[in-house]
Amino acid sequence: MGPGSVAGALAEYQRFLRRPGRYLDLPLPACPCCDPLEARDVLEYALRRLRHSARTELSQTVARLDEEFYRRTLPDPRPHRPPGRFGGWWYHRIYER
Image (cartoon, rainbow, N blue to C red; front, side, top):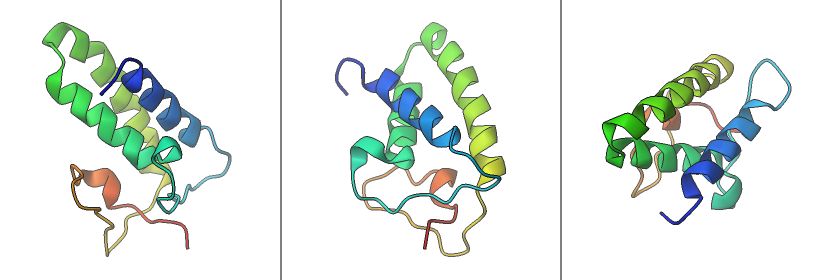
């Protein structure tokens, strides 16, 4: 992770959640720079490595965004879990068709 990667990931995750509509379909991975799951992976990586004091604020922000993500996406019975990823719950949501 380089300088600004956490801020960039947070901005991308927020941008995805600002899209209009009741439900959001996850985009098929084409470019890591605009993939909300890639952004969520970066945030998870940061949360696992930050010191407690720094982790607390980020964790609260990510938890609020995760609630919105979970509410506006649907479960996928055949989850998409790319190799080398954390494989978090966010990979178990429906992708666009």
